[in-house]
Length: 455
Image 1: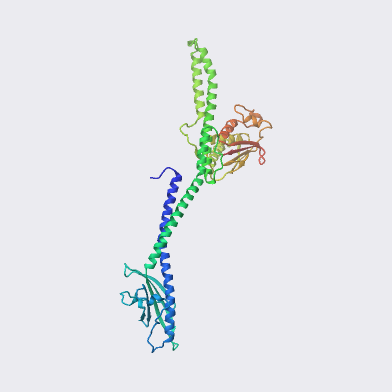
Image 2: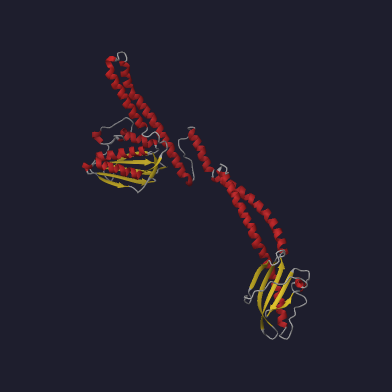
């Protein structure tokens, strides 16, 4: 069963990879290095045998019997106790074998017939599984004393004792070096893993600080790969603060709204029979107030997790509805948005923001309303997910009135500016989401221009 720690999981995975890698190195070493050593040795022996053969052939003619010198360049060919054998074949007949072969059952493997002149062939003879041997063949063309050329197939063969001995020594050195190298790599990889996962630990520490009230959002220097997680967590934190602040505001509104009906009911308690209709009227009013404030506090209480909402879909739905509502006005809509644009937000919040501002634009425009989206904007040294522009060709907001309509509970005369209905609520929602609401004169249409920055 895997441990819960990511660091430990990755570290154990690294250990398994290193073990598999070192095992592969050892197997490759046995096959490549050892046979490479054996081949290099046989090539040296072949050069000695070739020179001896060349001298012998150069001194002989067809009448002479082939006879190698008494002393060989490689002395082990003449040692009866040596494990190095040599053979020479001419015209498909074995014309010589080294004295080291005398009295032994070992003979050469069946020689190949398809070797070209000066071509070599190296192989491992496992005919005798208990005593395998390495064999090297080479076909050469030599001239005798009569200047006649002839093909000769030279063969050298050696047991694997030397290679096995060398392999044992090399394996011992290899195990020591691999052990040291493996431990060093594991230590380095462990340190690298801890360093690489440090940002995750930083996020945990920052979340604890947020929980203790020491921080408001995750605002550390996090790697690019974690920016998506950080943004989503910040959106979730902001959303929860929106919900909490909204509940607080609505509870305050509820308490304030109930003061008057309660005062009336208190005055009716002395003579209930004479004020029965008034009591029923105030009870009905209180019930309506409670229902209204609860609906404002949370349209769907059971949805406690924010969703991935497509802003473009919401804009299109609101555009379709407003087109029907303001059909007689024949408004020209200019909707310039991408096919999809997702943000993390409560659907009701997004509908309230976009719906209020687009509805205001439709109410007070002359004929044109423009809606567009700008992705990944930057405002006040902060990055946002998108910037929503809502513009109209109406009269706009008079100078000095903009800040008033953003205050909670404050309204500006609709007959003067034509905007402001629900704008204070929109501003509160945007601020609680961690966004920003700006307003001003539209350079393109001349009326109001709302700029909504959303995280």
